Length: 183
Image (cartoon, rainbow, N blue to C red; front, side, top):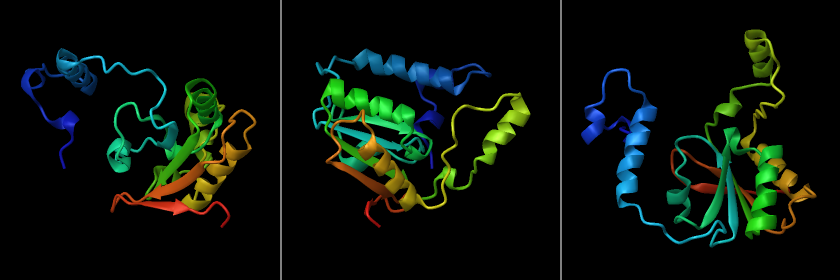
């Protein structure tokens, strides 16, 4: 499989040895900007929805959910878990930018399933400082989706919690499977 970052085009193939993928991304942005026109949107999502998902590169959320530019707020992190920073983003999304629905998406084969909180100990031993953040690793993806739904629903900062739903994206089929919050 070839990804867009690995396909040399035009000025990319002429790059000097030692250039980084960041050079390629900046060059791609220059080409993008040549044809760019302001879509005239504001920051309020048209569908009034925020999607919280894993940062995994295999998840093309807009394609998988049939979304267009401007439809949603997208909040991504390792595992798609609801952390304090996700609550911060959801709070701003709802209270200042009009979203009302929250869609949580974890996925099969997540890297957080193979980590433990010992990762923090390893980092501390390596760099001499313990991270303030939790790894948020998990063994049961469905249970972690339930925990994430519960964190959103019980946050005093997120006002609209009547439409919070959680899913697991299957990276082999592309299908979403809804997780029952009560199971």
